[in-house]
Amino acid sequence: MTSDNGAAIETEGLEFSYVDGTKALANVSLRIPAGKKVAFLGPNGAGKTTLFLHFNGLVKPDRGKVYVAGREVRYDRASLLEVRKKVGIVFQDPDTQLFSSSVRQEISFGPLNLGLSREVTEQRVRQAMEDTGILDLQDKPTHFLSYGQKKRVAIADILAMQPQALVCDEPTAWLDVKHSRQIMEILDRCNARGVTVIISTHDVDMAYAWSDYIFVMKDGQVISEGVPLEIFADQQVLQEAELAEPLLFELSRELAGKGCLKEGGPAKSIEELIGRIKG
Ligand SMILES: Nc1ncnc2c1ncn2[C@@H]1O[C@H](COP(=O)(O)OP(=O)(O)OP(=O)(O)O)[C@@H](O)[C@H]1O
Ligand SMILES: [Mg+2]
Image 1 (tube, protein in one colour):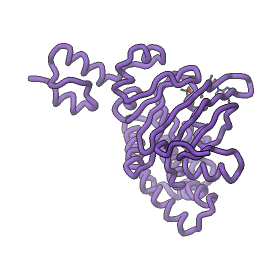
Image 2 (tube, protein in one colour):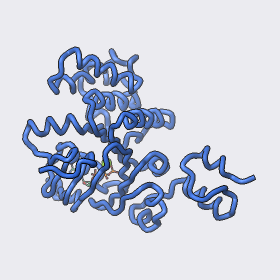
Image 3 (cartoon, protein in one colour):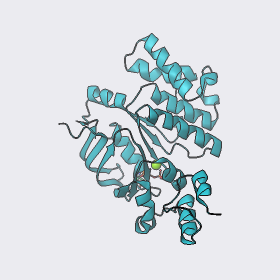
Image 4 (tube, rainbow, N blue to C red):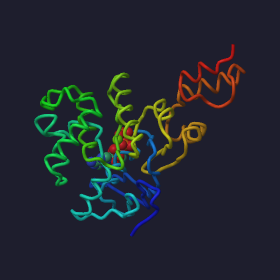
């Protein structure tokens, strides 16, 4: 069965409980538009990671359906291989993802597993290492890398599969400001090439400035969705999902309220805000 092709990923009535009985997803129906930068927000335990695991069939729902590029996900081996070519997931903790000895071997594993030739694999691996700025690390054993370096290798790992959708679970967690920015730049470059980028994050400032579209989760459900301006203007949703207001959003509102800001509306960057302060 196929569905709307303008969507990278769709879900329909997803329900999922873990073996210990924890209900992690309750009736999740959503549509992620292709080619966009999409963020999932929500408190710890909201179900973000569990939902992501459904996006490429790593977890099978108890009820409901997942569609990737308009095609319903099936759970036989051949179908799952197809889905995993289209949707790549970068786990929050790179140590759960990396297992080969050297960086180059690690990144080669995915394309070789897809049945690609040595030559094509080598091209893809080089491109992925270039895109993530880790060419100088290629011969290093992955277990000697710093956390931030492992994170980039984990992304390169998935980029080498050339997915249509790149799903990153908390890509900037535990990273310093400089390395967080580097990771988001990598994701932006992928998106500029047409890849749908989907992240989860607890960083509302980043989500506000970066996303084209936001989903807010709580207790295994999507409680709100929309463009960042809509989401962060909705005090009820912020309260329900225990989300803080982004600093730029709050500052813009306060300054506009005091008549100190040229033109209305919240600023999207600090440069924009400074440029709009009167005087
Ligand atoms: N392997 C597991 N076994 C049992 N329960 C689990 C398991 N993994 C997650 N859960 C439970 O499922 C629910 C959703 O967890 P999930 O990890 O998807 O949330 P999350 O939104 O990603 O949270 P966080 O922001 O902390 O990463 C939580 O109640 C969690 O305790
Ligand atoms: Mg999580």
